[in-house]
Image (cartoon, rainbow, N blue to C red):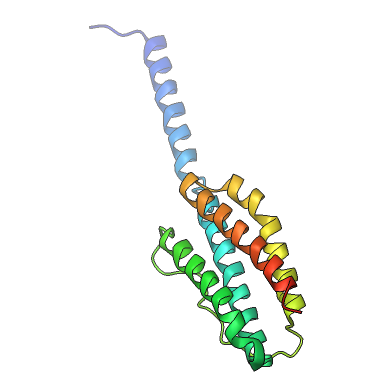
Length: 155
């Protein structure tokens, strides 16, 4: 088999180009995986629920006369928190529920506003969530809206 000089040079040039291209791919840094938006949403939801639980703990410690009345509200938030944590795919969870600190500024009115704000955020969060989590988020929002209304009657 007789190969012409032109054929050999063309084949050699092609191999060099392929080798250079492969070398560039290996030399370029691997793109870091982008954060999972669903995990980020869950982490935010869990953090928000933890804050609500802490607010209820603070309010109960600040005014023991209403602690028993606030306990069912807090228990519902703890149930939501447990349900959210079950949807985490990564082991572990975001921050643990913070230790309550007595803060006399946490009033029933402050709780009501926190519940309203949480409920108002739920439609957008539900739209961004996977279907099973979206149902949970919608239920949480309904519960928070009812809490805000019920807290308004405690004055």
